Image (cartoon, rainbow, N blue to C red; front, side, top):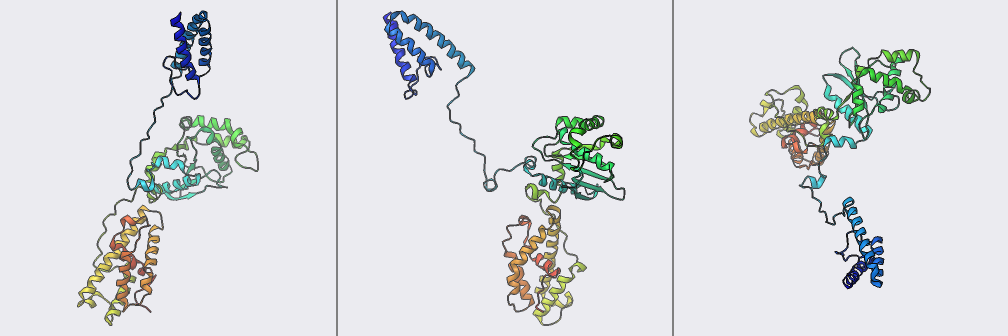
Length: 436
């Protein structure tokens, strides 16, 4: 009995420390986990106190101890205590590029962050990759589009056209997302506002969901689904001025339409085809491809070179103080002959850069580069020079050292391109080398 009494005193001491909020950091190894701290610990404390006052309460204490211990162990199995270990994040690998722009974002993830308007622009850009399929592409999005977003018109006079209906949602398309669009097509073709398209494709960053994909593969069920959902989605949604009931001639028109024209394009296919367009790098980054080699200038001066070549003849004449009309007039001036050959090489190099920009960047990017270079050499063009040839040398020298670092073509510009752009500007009549 004395042994039980001493054990009770030790338990009482442990329970006091464990149930004390200040001393709760002291762990009681003799108590079952989950019992010492909290209400159950205080109840057990009462049993211990009474056991110390009367030996007959020792047996009740032992019974209570076993009961609470069993419950606590069961609770531990159901809700294990979370580890208190400190988690250390795994830092991403960084380099000079990622510290400036962050980790790259995959195109399939990037398209999901765009607005609906950006998505329609993307589809218009993508459609330009189908030049063999379409003569022109138009965007009709907005009020009054009558259910058409991006339209591709086929070549020739057949009048065939395809519609790409843009939907930019946070999840895959469902049947409820398309009923209104199908209703508009049915109604406006019945009204003869436009003809039936050859194909009608839904385009979305997450594509069509499973249910819609299955429905698009079954034209009969798609037609039935539109009829069943007309009242809910179409009757008051096609136009705000009137309710359109699906009956009579309109219903007959719907039943006679070919619902096999409807489909959905997977977003990865769109991205792959968009990569072949001039807009892809501007949209997704990744750098420009390498420039192809260009052909050396032909021996004879071509018609497209006439303006800048005539300006060079005038600059040489101003320098030599006699008329220059042909390369043969420079037979005794090897320096000017070499300069003329170099100028032609520079011009053709810049023309190749212009073609490269046309194939890999949006329209107007090369012209923006020309404007930047033109602005940078204006001070030399306005300065006094001994003659026109001196002005040519000074302007090209300035062009060669201009910091053209804020342009998409910066990694593909050569020294020859800079001088060549000067000759292009002269060719376009922007300035000349000899003052009038």
